[in-house]
Amino acid sequence: MRRTSSLFFLFLLPSTLLISCSSSDSQSSEKAVTTTTTAEPVLTINGYVIAPNADLANADLQGADLSGADLTGAILTGANLKGAVMNGVDLTEADLSFADLTSASLMQAKLVGANFSSANCTQTNFGQAVMSYANLRSANLTQAFMMLADLTKSTLSGATLVGAMLDAVNMTDAEMVATDLSRASMHGANLTGANLKNANLSGASLASGDFATPPLQTNLTRANLTGANLKDAVMTDVILIDATMPDGTINK
Image (cartoon, rainbow, N blue to C red; front, side, top):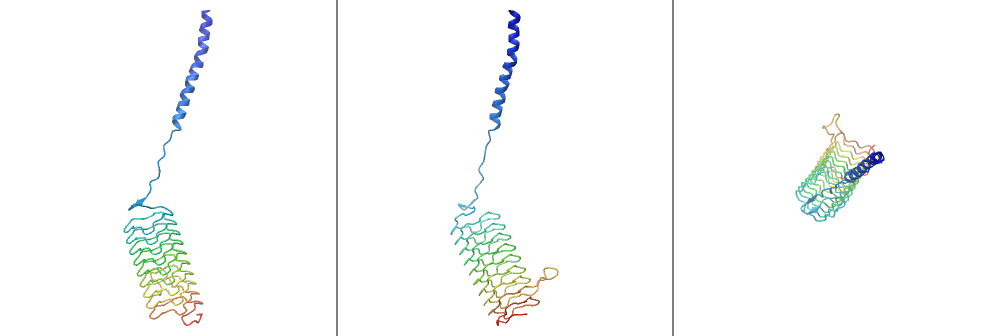
């Protein structure tokens, strides 16, 4: 009987250990799946939430630093953005009509399809910004800096760009009917197919730009200059192939 009892104990021992190990492994697995998540921080400036599609109409963001912010589709109508730093900001399809961007900086900003109609952009820096299909109708861009900006197929009809820096800007197929470009610097600008009917280019400089090698020529191929004021405009080396001149004749 003693030998039988001893053998029974030996057979039970491994089974007990196996159950113990299984229980330990189960507890470890439960602990392993326990994770913690943290919410992404929300950017707020002056109490305004800065985010895509945000409603920031009439917001006071004067002098705010919005560099690199994502404001795609945001509503900024009538907003105060005087002196704001918005370099690299994404304002694709955003509405900035009637906003005040005086002396603001939007260098290398993405402004595709953005609405700047009737906005005050006096001395605003749009250097290297992508502004294709943007609406700048009746905007005040007096002395704005737009060197190397892309304004392909944008609308600037009725806009004021007196003394603006437009060197090497791309305005291919842009609508610029009755736009005031007097005293603007447009060295090496690409205005291929642009509509400049009744535009004011008096005193504007469209000569070749000497900031590139070889010098960039201002291109007005197929541009419409019907009724445009070119008084005292400097047009040395300007390309005018098939352009409609102020008197209605087509240059060949």
